[in-house]
Length: 182
Image 1 (cartoon, rainbow, N blue to C red):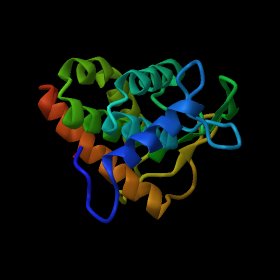
Image 2: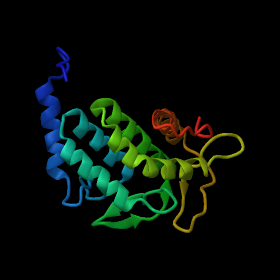
Image 3: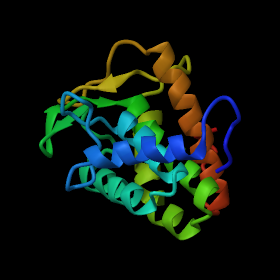
Image 4: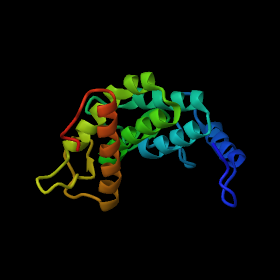
């Protein structure tokens, strides 16, 4: 990774990623300062670890995602001490796994890893499109009882759009096209 003169150095990027790895728990989760883990922010941290070359730490974090993904493809809104602290599943959290896996593939070129994560990505994006309304927006969550929210969030839908784009690109790359995601 080259320095960006006047903005950031490679050393600063690596130090930042090392600070993320330093708070990663034994199971691979990267918590917020107050202690909970959510999939979206966790994946953002894994992307930083990947860019900085901390692949072992990033892989440990992806393993955390695999272990905590629910059968419907979502993750609990918040996980604390390995248990759901808020059980609802957010659509933008679920969609973001596609961004993280696509990013990893672009940075590392590790197609075997992308293939191993493909079932996780596919379940997550199926959860997401299952919350799409007839008008096209995607509702922001499904509560702990499985009921969809009454509304969508603009920022959530923007993040979901990126997730679906990355998922469709990953699907094409892995020869498993998903035209409904596009």
